[in-house]
Length: 377
Image (cartoon, rainbow, N blue to C red):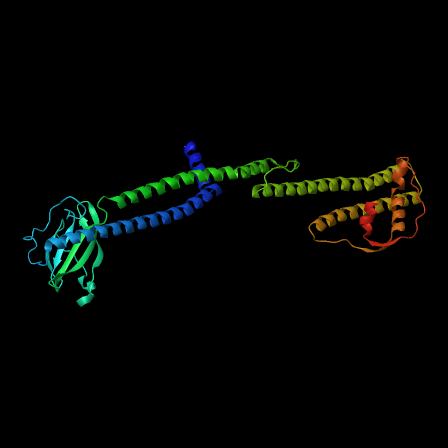
């Protein structure tokens, strides 16, 4: 049961795949070309057979007219050849011969069919304008439908119009058209089958790099964005792989910036927390005057405000990444800002036995965001 389900899932996947659709479109276009070419070939062969048949009919008509002479009252008494003889000009057993009166009624008919041959005799014309007529008719036989080519000529006796003579012969007595049609159908089917299999194989071969890209994309995780496809192809698949490589490089850079931001934020929060811990420890280590406690509380309050600003800055940066918020810029003096930062870090520096000193700080007016510049310094 599970094997059958997997088999049908595999078939469904193939039927909905791009390679299957590519092969199908290729076969469809090839089928149109083959059918068009085969139809033209069949039509040309039929026209050629019809031309050859008309030549045979004209030769037979000449022989029959010699036998009939100038009297069409009783053609059997004139020794009319209704049996098969040798040669293309003789009357064959599959041929049809019909004599018609002046009014178009059938006088006599010879041939393998009992049904009346219906010909449009009046298309021949009248008077001196009478010419021969060619028609293509289909009869029902024991072996199926068969097409006949008829040649109709006017009959004259001593320059007097006496009736019509119609001679018909099979268009394809040897079954050439049927064999040609069968051959063309078999050829088209086999060609389309081979083309479909070959096209599917070529499409599968062309889509293999896509499978490689999909498999490698599934193996890439956010913890390892350093992998690349590195396809050397210069076609559309190669361009797709190059685009994915560029996207992975941007993602890797973005994740690296995110990790760096997290580390920087932790570092920025560690500084005020350390200062608060230092001031609290020193204030609680021994009894001190009220001014010392007041100073310690002021430092703790200041660092608390700084931590609040840092948290707000983190939120601001996140919003800025989402293009939701911009920096709050204002006129300020960069030298004063630097002095404020030094004063903040002096207790922490003293704990680490580091001396912070400032050189000359000339007035440096700028326009910027105070909190972001303080964090940077």
